[in-house]
Length: 149
Image 1 (cartoon, rainbow, N blue to C red):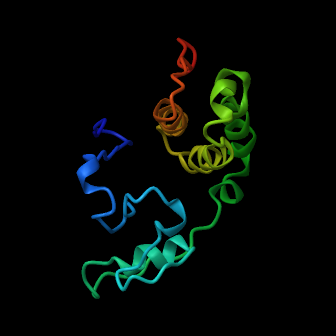
Image 2 (cartoon, helix red, strand yellow):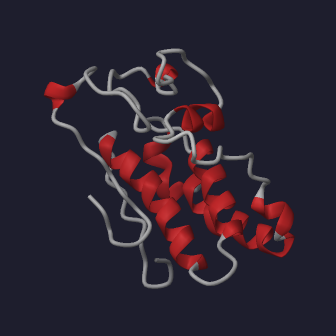
């Protein structure tokens, strides 16, 4: 599913469980081995993982990206305040099902990075990713309001 903007969700039929590999993981229910390289080795570094799946050796390797909040410190306070909804009582029912910390961190990162327009869209997409994970975990959270997304 693609929202024609910033989000894509891939859902596979259960018959493919454990029968796929690549940038989207291997669908075996074990997130610890999702960074499996093309040669079947497993790494914990996203850059090494992504670079191992390049389609052509002529493609440049991805480089480490600096935290965008360090380049846009004026955005950090705004991003942290906005993204705090993920750790708030709004999503409280979901917190025991889905750890909010990586979603909050990604929200702050993305919200700091979107400083040339579309900042609210980046923020809303990040919160929607957590809401989707909550929904998958069985908790449907009504988080959108007329003032937020």
